[in-house]
Structures are given as structure tokens and as C-alpha cells.
Image (cartoon, rainbow, N blue to C red; front, side, top):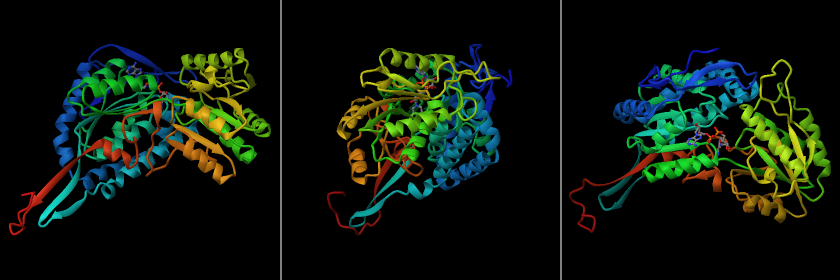
Length: 485
Ligand code: NAD
């Protein structure tokens, strides 16, 4: 094993697991065994909740301007350790080095936002009747939990860590058992940045820990990012225990390409969106709808896809199970009568034979009823459908149960606005393949891509991680008597 067995991080220390249940962590790049991750028990979650509860009174009473100082230092440490953190992300997730760097850069941007929270959480105050003032304050919730997926080992944890903690909460994170290493390093950096012990805790594990998080009476709020199947389970279970929950799920993002789109730019954007992070992004383009004759653009998309070389500018998919699942979708599409224009099946990277790679894949003449048209594939695959009108394209987009992102490629501003208005997705791109809103704008989809109110990042997250206290005060004995007296 390249690294020591992984431990939970509770009360500011790495704590050896109580039990012996563990899973291997394997690098998708070349099959190297990296470490083992403990499959913790509900008792270990309880230890973390106790540590977080103990830290909460001190942390929540620390003024926010002091709390964010930790995140100014954390941001500096992320920058200082950029190379090492990027290498760790690449190793455990399988993405390319430049994609891993981009992930750490995004983690830094998320932290910058948290540093600006004192400017954003000022409450309101008004004299509502003579001598009587009403005032609001954002108050932290207490102990909160964050459950994260495998595809962004640093960025998705950092969607929640800086904001939730800077707003005064104490957190327990449950990393993906497939990529547990990066979170441990983030814990060390938070401690080095001066975060008090117990404010941030890690409990590794699988279903048992997720269920225990949903059920634990000491946890006030649960944020989840992962597949729709599990998002529904978590949302239902956590809210049935009267917790606040925001659960982000999977996606099937549609790109609508109109004949007046700039061919070269469109092709580059489509190819980059479908293949970036090996298609393992909830914002990846997974379906394209060509409106009218866009053959000249599809030809260019294929040219761009052929320039994407697995093991060079295309990373690995997370494991063999994923590779098999993605390839079986492609095979099914072929059986259903679609045409495979660029085929990424059976990809082996020389010198990395134990890596799990799928090459870029372009499938044309897909019909909306085929599985590649409607299901999340989570690989570097684009399924192209064709329609005669924009309304037909929108009908396909609207019929899909997800609603994370949708994009349009056109030079017609009116048409772009029409699509912004009629696409049923939370994040829309115009001539942008991956329309991730950058800070301070918030991130979150619609429909079955998100359960719960509000978004997970940006200003919207303030409402999720705090509760509002309203106070009404009268200090002026001279003020007249009215119905508020
Ligand atoms: P996943 O749902 O399999 O796992 C997510 C987390 O849930 C992990 O920590 C895992 O340990 C836990 N988990 C898995 N099965 C569980 C179960 N049955 N009960 C309770 N907990 C369980 O997701 P993944 O494969 O790690 O990540 C990929 C998925 O995440 C894709 O669907 C992708 O679209 C989605 N995703 C969505 C967003 C978004 O913003 N909407 C962002 C990133 C990833």
C-alpha cells in the first residue's frame, strides 16, 4: 500500500477505527493499491457527534469576523499545497492532473467566498413602531453533516466545509469510500489554519454511516451530493427525523445545437463538456439535440473527440464496475439502432493496463426512448438526437426527469433567451458547455437533480446553514402604548 491505512478524524485527531471492517482504495489511473478505508460503525459516528457538540458552544460564540480568519489561512494553505493536493486528487479519482489542479482552484474560490461571509450575513434592523425595533440575526444550527460523492474529492467537500463552518456550525463529513484520502489532508490543513478541535470531523464508511447520520438526534442538518437514487433515500430519511436536508442528485444534461452555432467553438465545447473528468461530472453534457441540419458541427465534434487521448488528456473512470456499465450503455445503443461515430470501448492505456479507461464516444441517431438518451451514463459519452424545431428539442429536454443543466449553442440572442425561459433546468448555458455558476452565484439544479429548498453554495447556502432569529425590543419607556406592548 502506498499510504498508511486511513483513520477517522474526530476531535482534532486521527483516531484508529474501532472495528476491522475496511475497503481497499485503488487508483483508477493504473490499479495501484493506495490504502484501506475503515467502514465505521454508528458508534464511531456518535463519537464524532459528541466531539462536535463539545466544540459548538465555543465556535458558535466566536464572532464571524474571527471565524473567517481560519478560512483566510486555509485558503493560503490550499494555495501553498496546490501541487500535492492536486496529485492526491488525481491519484485517488483518476482525473488528469490539470483537471485536479482546476478542482483545487475551485476549492480556493469556494473558500474565498466563505471569507466574504461577514459582508453578507449582516441582519436587518428597523424601528417598526415608535421606540420598538425588530432585528434579525443568522444563527448557526449546531452539528451538521455533509455526505459527498467520488467525482470531486476536494471541490464537493469544499462546497460545504467553508460556508457551514464559517457560519458557526460544527461539521461531520462522510467522504466517498472510493476517494477518502483528500478529505484527511483537508482536515490537517484546517487544523493548521487554526480551526479548533472538534469543529471538523471525518467519519469514513458506507450505507451504515449515512443512515446513522440521517437518524442521529444530535445532527441538525444533512447535505448530500451523489446519485438521485441515494439522494431520495437520504432526503426522505433525514426529513422524516425532522432534520433540514438538501440532497443533490444525478443529472442528464442536454446541449441544444442550432444550425447557426459557430462550428469550431461549439464542437470544442461539446467535446470538452462530454469528456472532461471522463464524463464523471454532474454538469457534463450527456445528450445533444441537433436542431435542423447540424451535420457539419457533428463532424467537427467527432474530430475533436478523436483528439482526446485516454491516459493523456482524458482521465480514467472510477473503477471496473463503472467502465463495464458505461460500455454496456454504448453496446445497448448500438443494438437499439444508434450509430457509434467514435467508439471508446475496450480502451487500454499502454503501461497502465490495470487502469480503468473509456475513450471518448459519440453516438448519433439516438432516439429519445433509448436508454442512452434518458439515463445518466457518467462516462465520456454523448448521445446525439435530432429534431426539426427548437420546441421539439425543448420537449426532449423537459421530459427528462433530471434538471441540473442545459445549454444552447447559437448566435441568435432571441432564440437563446427562449431556451433559457423554457428549459427545465437550474443552470443554463449559452455557448457554454459546462454552465457552472462561479462564486458568488449559487450552484443547484432542479427536478430530480435536487431535493430540498435553496442551493448548496453561494448566498443561497447561508439560508441552509443558519436559522433566523427575530428579536423585537423596546428600550424607550416614553414610547406610546400600542398593540405591541
Ligand atoms: P452515490 O450516490 O453512489 O454515493 C454518494 C454518497 O452516498 C457516498 O458517500 C456513498 O458512500 C453514499 N451511498 C452510496 N450508496 C448509498 C446507499 N444505498 N445508502 C446510503 N448512502 C449511500 O454517488 P457517487 O457514485 O459517489 O457519485 C456520482 C453521482 O453523484 C452521480 O449521479 C452524479 O451526477 C452525482 N453528483 C451530483 C452533483 C450535483 O451537484 N447534483 C455533484 C456531484 C456528483
